Length: 117
Length: 113
Image: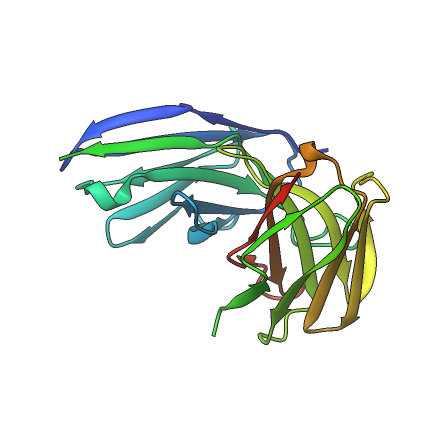
């Protein structure tokens, strides 16, 4: 099955700095890579995703890059703000073909991001 | 509307109780999921229903029993739980065609005493 590794496990940055979280995956069949943000006591919230036919995607201050050859993808947050403090999870999935694993998410272990004012 | 709702928000139950968690979505999604999440860990998949049929059971103990009455509803029946089952139980839903974004409900915080 798929194995997703996520680093670092904790990340502290000063407000206004950039933050980068990196993930690797093992299954070359994976073609969909979402990122979730989970604030304390709240649900995981989908913040951005990328599909394997795209190398980069941006949405305001967040961006995700994908290197299919190296099987890694990264989340970039620019101009960080205290409200960006949360646990971030990367995930991988395959969305083609059939079988019980279609659409199933394989999560990384999470990164606790703390943004200091 | 990308909302998945769950009830109750909090649940405290004894080890001999029977209770149920409920999940609802009206996005027309045909896949629904139950996850268990411990503090600061990723969600751990328990069950998946695809087109109202159980497609994945991650070797979950039989004291957890899922049910999908229709395409919008998902239940998780609980019986004879153990204290180590205390966790946040998350429901999620997604499409199985075109887009696969998975949306989570707010969860039920379960405490087993």
